[in-house]
Amino acid sequence: MMPELQAAQGAAAYRRRLTPKQMEAEVFARATRAIRAAEGGGPLDRARAIADNRRLWDAVHDLVVDPTNALPAPLRAQIASVARAVVRECDAKEPDLGFVAEINESFAAGLWR
Image (cartoon, rainbow, N blue to C red; front, side, top):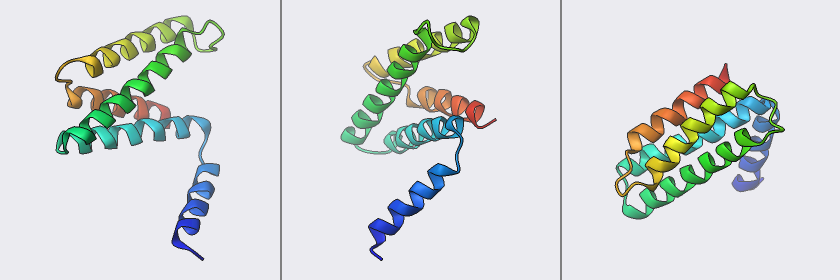
């Protein structure tokens, strides 16, 4: 079997064992890994990681401000506030990647519980 096919099948099997919350945690973990790698990487790696994180947090914000979201309103407001802070940081001239990674890690940890 080709290594690429084997890897794809393994990844699919792994995903089936995760709950939806765990899959969300993995998205934050992946974004964190990219940010951590970008801290020591080149400008393209940095720009890509920042842009990906901005898109992630834009999506989070859009989901929690949706009035049909089932989370309690106070929790949705708190998450929206965090999302805005991360997006502002990503838009800064020199974003604090450590801050962004820490927020991602906190959300991933919360989702794994």
